[in-house]
Image 1: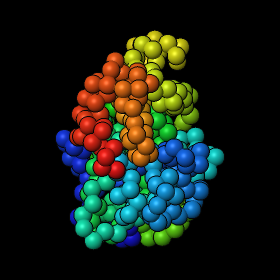
Image 2: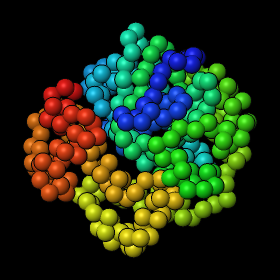
Image 3: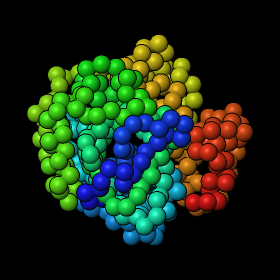
Length: 316
């Protein structure tokens, strides 16, 4: 994705297209079988090429739909933040693509906000509640900064829910200087070279410590690790807070409800099982994920992904 020009790609949610250019999702939790902590299974700072086969599939981020198609056209890499930046930044992700025909990259997004350096200007991507769709055309690259859930709030200076399902110019949050930094970022080729000016920019603008932001990040981590949590009151009990407090914190710091976070974790798990290529007992999986029955899982999956899970499994 080197030096993309405006119009090289378009982004939409399935229902409401956000403004600006986006990226093949930002989300970088590895699939089952990938090395723990590795975005798309890559080593920190290392380029990952779309070389096909089982190894490449293991490097595709959890939440990316139709991974076999994805690795044919997209190269991904990650770079870990410095300890100081890591209080707020989960990782830097780098995506390159080259396609002869338009390709729609579809992703079940995570509850994270991203600062994305791309042409023609850097953008802020709020949490996308529906299916995230990015149309890739031609050749291009982007560098993304994935913030820990809740940890963009200190930079935003207000509720993160204001960014949900929206894409806004990064200059609205970080000032016009971010546009100049974006030019330096996009001039790079290797992942570490792109990440370096982005991190220097953020380190110069670290906000005052906000203990609540880190507390909320831990809450999201615990919820997403428990796909069997189905109700908000269950999550509140597990986190030792009231339901009202949990809902208020998520609206302020995450931008989506606890119910959405739990539902998204279940859908990602269902898609991951389908992507594995093994026969899936959908009734058993529905029970494992806390659904009342298989029909509820099918409805939930179809409403977001656009096809029933069994049909999706046959197409991956």
